[in-house]
Image 1 (spheres, rainbow over the protein chains, first blue to last red):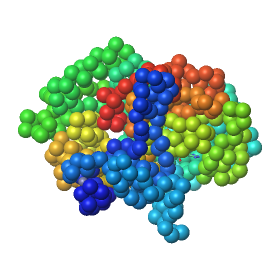
Image 2: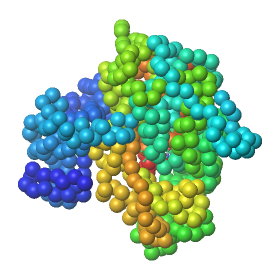
Image 3: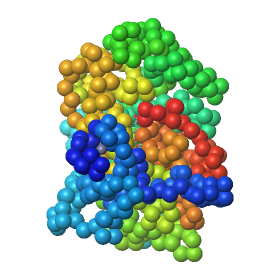
Image 4: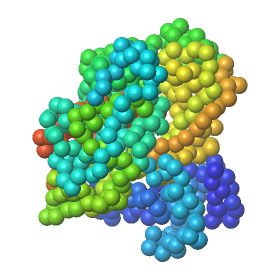
Length: 116
Length: 416
Ligand SMILES: Cc1cc2nc3c(=O)[nH]c(=O)nc-3n(C[C@H](O)[C@H](O)[C@H](O)COP(=O)(O)OP(=O)(O)OC[C@H]3O[C@@H](n4cnc5c(N)ncnc54)[C@H](O)[C@@H]3O)c2cc1C
Ligand SMILES: [Zn+2]
């Protein structure tokens, strides 16, 4: 169960108040009519889907109903930060460093089945 | 390969079952193969088996990072059906259904395929209209199907609450009598054993960590046990397909999500068919062992952790108890998750890729177990010929740029 900090309400709330809405920071092409099929298809259907750090859009559906962003690890499910719309993440795949050598990521990766 | 038979069972009983052969070898990787299959789930193993059996390819390896069948193949709720709406999907799943019907004999392994029928419930007028449309489409494609009203459903499943008092009353269902369930582990093991008997090398605990690509063509893989060469490579890695595509330098239109299932304590036989509901989102059957097998929905967020969230299980059990008040005090024994690769149009991808010689079979998402024999069969033909099999051709990656999607969200909506 996630315990999510809504940057607008300024409070932690339970996962059930929120809905995930997929990858964050996707920019709609300025002039869809001038996109090639390739560009338009990429915009509509092709997502990053990383095994690791992921920036994603969530909505506080039964709270303030505002959209905001989460940086989350897709193997450990650890929430690393939440930030408002229009802001940029402070943690990225390049800058992310697990806290200790025996981080949750490492522990989970060692569990039977997880690497399978 | 030592053939299994009733006579063999009696013979082995005389020696206290101590002389059974191992089901497959544990070979050391060769330097070079004609074809490498990445992913030792049901689809990958079936691909290897049909390549060897029907296309005479002699030198094949299946590379699996964990153990055979340890991915979604051994984590699913085993529902097999072919009543999909669109011609392309219906043809592919029905091809699989026909192979299921002779599979145990073909691979000399009891996959416990049980055609106990599948009900897809309708709870609203719109559900019923969609069901009518889908069943009509199925019949035009030669796939069995009937539309039942609430009374017909009640007759088939007396323990279900089909009264008007239910929160979402059952108005009817589509019914595919030839559909059913099969034992998922046996499918993986049966194909593995049959492939091994044809000389396929099954390399477990071997993880592909990269591809060897030169001038836009693949000629091998990097693994934790060294490099292995092959000019034709088929990736069948379900939830990890995107990670593999990344290694090869391109993207797939897939998102990986946890999908979970749970089983109850074993009960006396009480449910002799499969009940699925898109609307309240739950599906249930009873295994031969007696446990109720219950499937949930996907978690909405991306994840690779092979475990699902609690709210999702809770939601599913609410739906199950609403449909089957009689199960309200059944205790659950085990719960687990698999990582499914969902595709925007709820249909799989069987396709060539921007890298020559590298093929992908993925995107089966929440409902690929039912397709295992068909998927392996057409993918093997595609790898052998270097051209996609006619049943696979509509499922190319190109459709996400051409717009020729095959939208199966209606038929695949609840997952399976
Ligand atoms: C809870 C749940 C319920 C489901 N219920 C149903 C159902 O009722 N009916 C139905 O039809 N479908 C169902 N499905 C979907 C079905 O399980 C899958 O579509 C199907 O099993 C996929 O088979 P596969 O062989 O492609 O994948 P898998 O069995 O997942 O095999 C892929 C293999 O690739 C391996 N692999 C990944 N990366 C690498 C690498 N880098 N190197 C080497 N090996 C690698 C993995 O270890 C894995 O063993 C369900 C799925 C889940 C999770
Ligand atoms: Zn809020």
